[in-house]
Length: 322
View 1 (cartoon, rainbow, N blue to C red):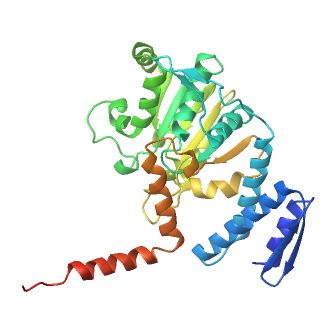
View 2: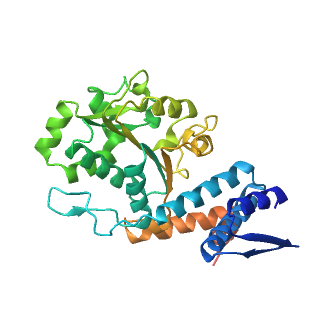
View 3: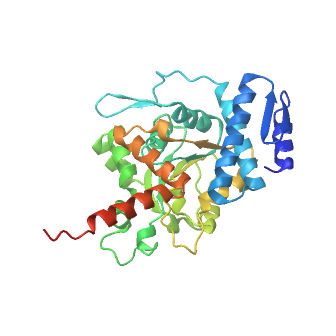
């Protein structure tokens, strides 16, 4: 690991002292800072093994994440805090520590990025915050936005009006809305554009005032689209951008705007990044196991899995002449 990286870590944790001896790093300081430094070093080692090297941006991202994590830990959120109630009367609240961080970050910031794998509740929590803001008249409308990557953002050939064309891509957002708002109220809000749906490509040139805006599946937004979306935000508005960097559907020649945005905006006040992981999965119990299995596969570069697959092919490919 580069000496300058260790120096930056040392400077970031003023109450601790790092000492390097050969391949060993010794840390003296408060236990909370020790745990944070240990996490950063382990993540840097993991990145180096996976990518062959680590960059200064990688380190800055990890330092920013740890700083954000320490700040949010100081603010307690009651586990029983209810955002709103579903149409059946069930309370909707953040169910995991990182979902609570989304709530806290949204309360304190105008733009929040919620990044994590499928099933971690980032979209559901975001919709709950938007509906709560609308019901409490903090905003005048909700705008739901999603890239339509599969259709190449060219929706004209599909039958129906704009709502009909984009509905399949916004289905997860509708599922959440239908739980939190009765059918007649939801239909009325849709008809009056109090709740608006929009493909990302149709956001250009707009200014969204007094709105709670959600950009879902943001890993499928290009860098240009991400910049375009973020600059649509008007006065008295909030935005939550959700995405999963492991499920990018963009063509190989296009880079995800969600991946680069972490480095571009990390130091801007009023913008917060929340990172979710397999511990936040609230879907079927097997989802967490699936995510962990994929992470193990990616960590070893798929070597063991490919080796096992080759051996299985050899075994099944034998000819039995008996």
